[in-house]
Length: 170
Image 1: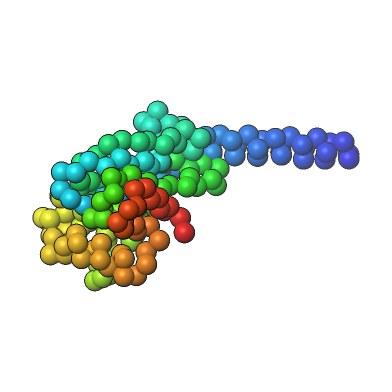
Image 2: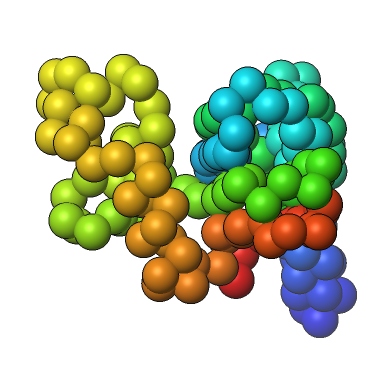
């Protein structure tokens, strides 16, 4: 009887571990947003964590580095699986320009009025339809707001700074 119980426990444990691996392998998509602003048409180099289209697990998330022209806004997706959430980040490299400001956030970050979410203000298609109320809020006022509340995902360059990095997690 003890052998049967021991075998059942072992088999049950293996099945649970295998299920966790199978469930974790599929991954859950996390979405976040990045925005970089500064002197218009000026290029900067940014890096961030993203899941390639072929990603199947959080292990497939990769660091993307690219040169972009300001202002720049992007919706980014990563995968988390097995309870492991990726450390999403935004790194900006500029050529000693104190006008550069940037942030990283999820779609849950509310703005001053509590109704409009931060990403809604930076997505052009939100200037009409159900989100038309967001068009009255300027991008500069959002950046000023994020700075004033010391939002952990906000960065601003000072004279002489060339590289900064912020994380989505606190």
